[in-house]
Image 1 (spheres, helix red, strand yellow):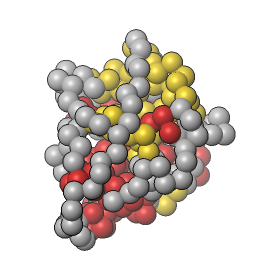
Image 2: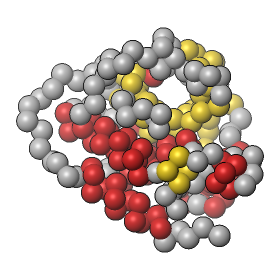
Image 3: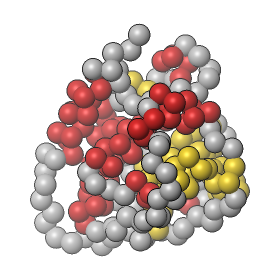
Length: 212
């Protein structure tokens, strides 16, 4: 049985990393990206349905007005710090190793361990706790460069769409990952998932978006 009491310790460690430095010396040039084309509603991942059953407060929010994150030097710095803090705070283990089952189990890092879904959910929570609009933080299912299923967090901003990924500390435009995009949450309702049509961007070039 996992002890949920461990979760605040992970959160505290991550927040310590996020707010270790609060100064921004000068206004950097902000990155830009394109916007992914979304299609019609599609099937909801079982892991999300199960997560909502166990944590209904995360999902029973009803319809919401779509909001994009306003990207500026402060929000960009926080995105980078959250991405790195979560990547550092969680020990990567597979779903089978962690839970003893091949059935997808989505959760927060209650014991400091998890796979890609745990990383993405945790980053989403940290950003929501910092006042980022939930409607701009979208759980997203892709196929990685090896063709394996993978989950990332898409952040929809007024400068385009970027992804927070446990496989890299660099925040990249969605179409600079080389991933094949399958589906993601709708901005207006996190319990509605939209087809992304298998859109695929170019392979990532190291350093094409610098972290802050």
